[in-house]
Amino acid sequence: MRLVYFPETDSLYIDFVDRPSVESEEIACGVVADFDAEGALVGIDIDSASTMVDLSRLILAGLAEMTETLA
Image (cartoon, rainbow, N blue to C red; front, side, top):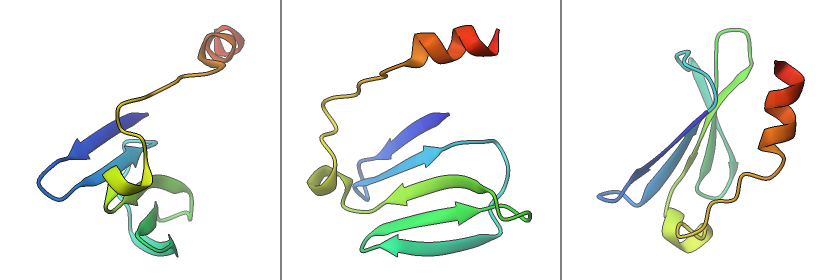
């Protein structure tokens, strides 16, 4: 998973997998979900991110437990 912030447009993209999206759906005002050809979620785009998300804080809770499970 990759988070990319674009300051020039104040948008945050959360990229879940490295597959192209073929369909997008606005799931909330300013929040667009991207789906691949099979209908799986591949990413989320958040417009006006600085007003919707605290960009100064990123907490990865439970990540250690998840990586241990996958190993």
